[in-house]
Amino acid sequence: MTVPAEVREHWREARTSARNDGLVPALTLLSRALSPGVAPRGPRGHAVVPRELLGDLPEFDEEEDGDGGADPVPGLAVLGPAATPPAPAGPDSHDWGTGLAWLRLGASERLREACTAYLAARQVEGTSLLLQQLVKGALADVLIDHLEIEGVLDDLAEGVDPDSPLAPVLPLDAAALARLQAQITQADRALLRLLGAHGFTADGPGRTAYASELLADVYCGWPGPAGVPATNATSRKDNA
Image (cartoon, rainbow, N blue to C red; front, side, top):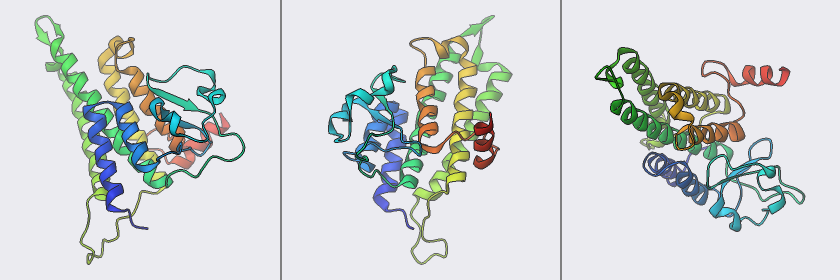
């Protein structure tokens, strides 16, 4: 199954929007492109939907909105499993899941940039925190993670010569996508540790990082640590 060029372009746009504008605008963009008028449902029937798109969803029921809970971030709603009749079919799961990986990469890059700026402005004994060896090493590790993730996703998004033996471009399988999502989560958590308490204040970036992680959980299942196969991680969670 080939990945259409327009879908690959939407993936890239989601990353750029998440990095420049934030997670909610990027998810709005991706939803309009890949799932117009339909709430994309995860394997357990849940959906994370920008609130500005709720009025376009024929299956939307205000009583199921968020299961009575608070929005993960302002502008996002979490919908429970659709009631009967079944909700309309959503986007291709591989296209949507890969698009979310692009989006989450952009959001993680935005978090890295915010973390770098915050640490650069903080000083200990007259020296910027950004110049401390442990901090520099941690940021370098996150940058390597981002470059690795970008490399995997670029292989999917770059068009190939149709005469090449590498054609067609294929989507990631579910296990590989889950590991990629886990690597993004791992990078986000490392950045939040560098930010300390600031990462979890009301105006800090922790809430957005949580919403990004929620997207991976809702649509890809809990992936577990980046080095653990998705099937093993799932079985451990089910047996917990």
